[in-house]
Amino acid sequence: MICLTNQPTTHIMQNTNKLFFWSITVALGGFLFGFDTAVISGGEQAIQSQWSLSDFMVGQMVAMGLYGTIAGAVFGGLPAERWGRKPTLFWIGVLFLICSLGSALAPDVQTLMFFRFIGGLAVGASSVVAPMYIAEIAPQDIRGRLTAMFQFNIVLGILVAYLSNWLIGMSGGESSWRLMLGVMAIPSVVYLLLAFLCRKAPVG
Image (cartoon, rainbow, N blue to C red):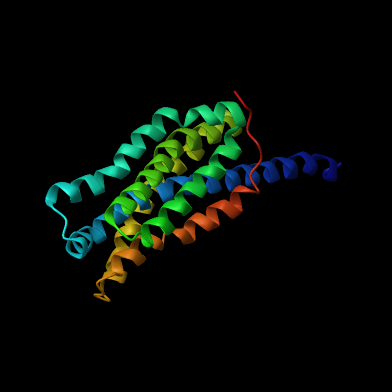
């Protein structure tokens, strides 16, 4: 009788653990959101100096990520509705990875702006699709806690971005900004690998 009564409890605990794992994984999109948004601040002056940019051009370079964020937030839900939350979250991770590598290797400011826009698309889309996914897989009694992980990770990503910029900036190299922007590839790859292990959420 003891074994019979413990089986449902064990099953519930296993399901809860899976829910937390899936939610934490998806919430890493919030970490990348915060990191990508804040990391550009560390290299702004170095980028302006390297390419002799006007203040207006620097402003546009920084704002390009925000332009992408608006577009991603408006249209990010469309692929999630058509192809599903999990595939969309995976491709959001791909966009973050492309942004980080492309920004780090950009030969000119126009190319950098293009890849910053790509990163903005990922930021905007993740702000829509990740909470949507978590809300759909979570039972009502813990839905708020799980969804809040995304918001917490945004703040954590911002904090880690500033810390990373500070550590890299201590080297004082002229191209240190490239490493600042490229380091986001590490959490992007981690996010992509873990995303494979998430369960599918309903389409529509």
